[in-house]
Image (cartoon, rainbow, N blue to C red; front, side, top):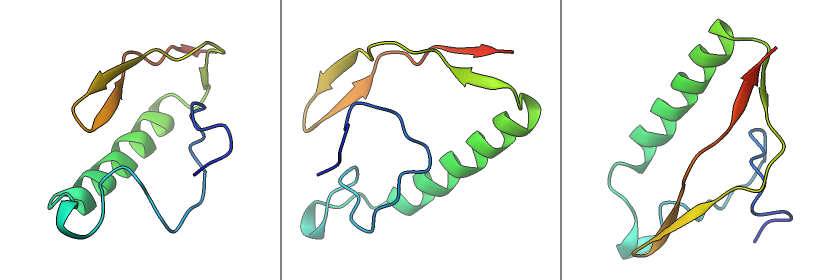
Length: 77
């Protein structure tokens, strides 16, 4: 679906998200989770404006129907 799908690109733009499914398989709390995530990242970046992603290979943990990011390494400059 996306170019470089394993890269964390916070400003990636898409009208068709794959994270929460579609139709009968959509997540009832998807819009709440998306909004909570936006707020949490905004607050984090306000508190730590020089936070940078450490260039690394991301490790994913498979889950039933999706995957989880094991860790996201960042540094404060």
